[in-house]
Length: 118
Image (tube, rainbow, N blue to C red; front, side, top):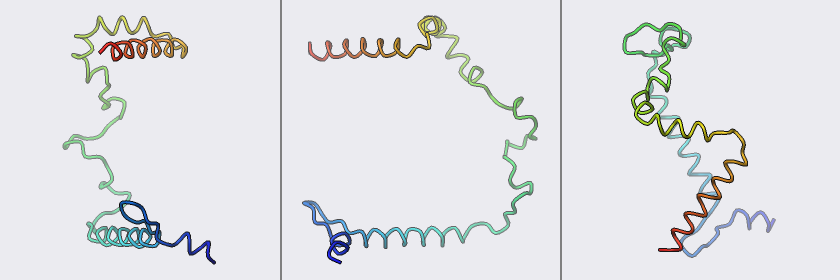
């Protein structure tokens, strides 16, 4: 019984206390308040009707592949203006993890040298 009392007792620290019973009560109160607030929601919602469709600013939804805005379209100006950098990075990309670890070690060594010289 003393082990259970030790676990459920108040743990004193230098800046406060920790008591599992208090935390269980707080968690239960938060759950209860959340459940009550959820009860105030809109009662007209019906699953499986038109209400579950995405709102697309009044536009009808059709094939998702045609509606999807690809990243290449979204960042076209950014990638076009920095094309020379992306071409260099594309040539450096080998897909071999040991190459990336080597680059990481080189960059960290340069950063340590810069910090050491300051």
